[in-house]
Image (cartoon, rainbow, N blue to C red; front, side, top):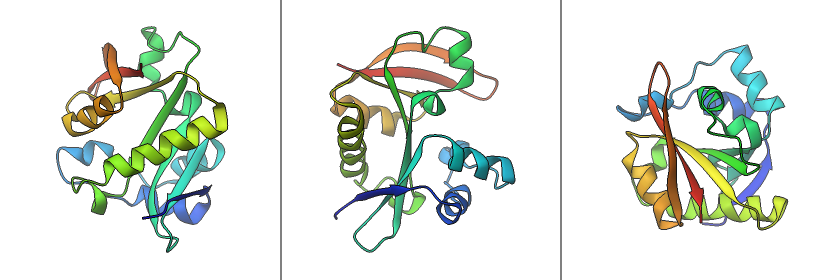
Length: 156
């Protein structure tokens, strides 16, 4: 599968906001409203499509990839590129994460150079944590919001 990054547009944003994950991953389901569309269009979000121009996932970099509660507890004090990502629910749990995450990291390095990378993941999402560990990410710190426990991970 050949992947390509393209600019987020309103059509892709709408598709992403309509994604519905099965429990416990339904934590990642979003509201489809004007504010959510605006965030995906105005923040640093990119879309990943396959060679048939089908939406595979998205990623963002910088402060848009940070969980606001983490900033309040000092999780993001270092000058590191933060990455956030999501893959379409129909591809989750089927071995597609490695290819997708490889592509996202490669895209980040093309844009920012060989810089340190950090991500934030919900602690219950052991499937994602295991994938990130395969890429050399290690746990840095934990924090809690009203809805979940999170951990930051940094690529070493």
